[in-house]
Image 1 (cartoon, rainbow, N blue to C red):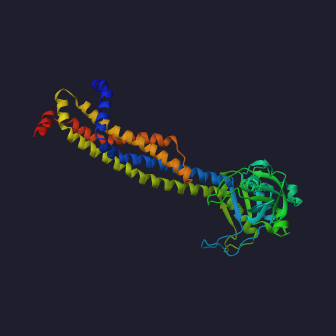
Image 2 (cartoon, rainbow, N blue to C red):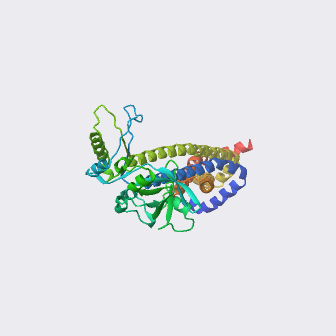
Length: 415
């Protein structure tokens, strides 16, 4: 930029503002596409980041480096098999001895039981588990601790409550050490878990209670055969790198233990929660990119709108351009003048769009519960868009104005 352009920069900014302010409605309509486009992109980025965070938190709530083995397989067509396996404690012990495995925990599927304290009642899913289950699931305690191996061995009537159950049955009071009736049988509360929120399918993870495996069999399930209670096995492997090896070795081990022939399908299923997390994240990213691409169309429309307005402006101000060039204005100064006006339209539109995106996002989070997560990337992206769109959409009208011949410009106006 030349010296004269530098000296005239701020006066030219002020003049650009005056010019745009003189045609407020036209300037607003020119900015509308930019406002909608930037606001949409910022909002979509925030929703995408928020959804990604929710997915990661939901998967992390289930545990890290974790496999879940359920007693239902799939046939050769990918359908659920009619024949399911029946796990025993010996299966759990055998899996625990594999080199890739860090810990194992047998458990039952949650079963709903009525729970009550005095006149307060709440229906809660109860799982019969071993102490390692809560460790594998990365579940921390807000009060107390887990039951012990001795509680499992002696079938003690103790229970660990999720946050929702504790809040419903012990309003504004600590449940630790107190009794809660589950299916009309008293259990002593030994621990309360920290909240984990919702799962990917919308279930409340904190609406849960956990009792020792043997206690659940005797007092709740009515089954005194300890080994037949295992419906699901939770496995924590040493690291993510050995996840595939662990799945292969567990599958081989269980097929051998269940005496399955080579032509027979597995009568169990090994779920890789890390893979589920990756699939969910990839799906969310693809959906976010689609929404952002759609929102970006508004930016293209907005840039075309600014270009059209600037071309109209150049035509309307032909006389002004001719007079300026006649009294000594350079092509660089004329070019800068109209570029500044185009960039000002884009910058103001982007700022308004940014505020609109933030406002709609915060309202959606507060009133609709939509997860949003704004980041510095949103602000930087809007600023880059503002400058880029302003230059791209304004450069042709500005070039056209700068290359007008003063005599021709004045002659056209006179004619």
